[in-house]
Length: 224
Image (cartoon, rainbow, N blue to C red; front, top):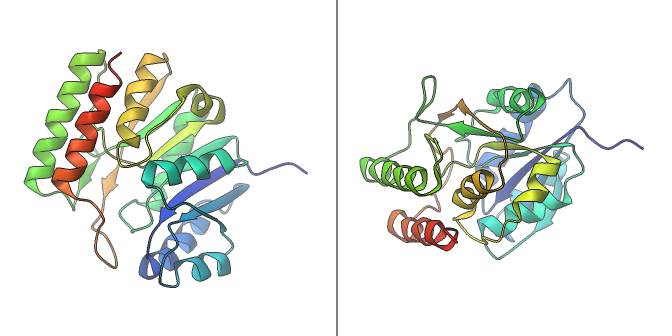
């Protein structure tokens, strides 16, 4: 039996107020595609898993960190085209077709960017915006890239490209590692505009200073 064409991987942790809105929105956008949704859950204490299963998602578990959860889902995915997406309603499901088109055009990785024309963010305090700009500049200077965004998880991958990256980050540094290794491996990368919305329900897991340190560590760990 032929597998799905698109696999959407969504890490979750206590997202019962959001997952029930994200999944139907994905279905509306991808109705014409053969697709699957994989939820990788951190053993949520609420109804995230039961809601996801009821709506047809395949559920896996990972307690280590965002990077580990994302890789668990992506490696288990059966699609030829893989997409990573957040569960908190910050990613616009209608942009899925843009991410799909980027891969179909011939790119290995297609990354949403909040900092090019057509993109933006409703959920970025000035200190995070400043930190993003510093890290983007640092990566571009060190690795000779031309990125406009770095720490945004709305992305698509050609299956073979993901296997070439050899990702190791278990936590929040996963997006930065993807950007760096894509350049080092000579992969074809496209940035497309993406509009980041405010989180729907619940409290975000991001910690500006802790996660900023993780990003910086990831950058210098991958220089060699």
